[in-house]
Amino acid sequence: MSEFVKVACVGDIEPGNGITVNLEGTPVALFNVDGRYFAIHNTCPHEDGSLGEGILCDNVVICPVHAYEFDVTSGECLTEPAYRVEQFEVRVDGNDILLRQSSDV
Ligand code: FES
Image 1 (cartoon, rainbow, N blue to C red):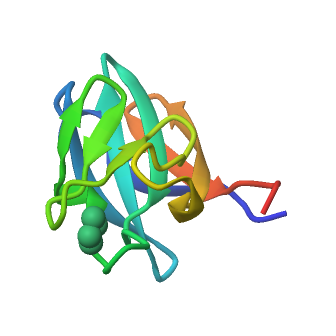
Image 2: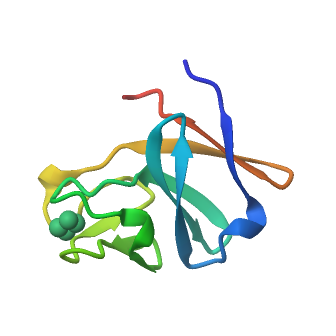
């Protein structure tokens, strides 16, 4: 199983926003939902939009390219269920946000 890797600091993401981080070469969209952090693969499976640049509404991010909606807590695509994205495990350690690949992939 992969190790947790620091990708950001707590202050890097305001509540209700997301950023794109790099987890050992994998682009990951990291979101702050009311103080809780969630991470999904950054690449929209529709046509490669950057989900970390999408608009976050509660726990749903809207892809900036064609507005498909993804639940950031599960990776499910609410617009087209076949477009589920990979989820990553998130850990907060002090001021650090760490990620690792989910064990169920
Ligand atoms: S690229 Fe994301 S909805 Fe089309």
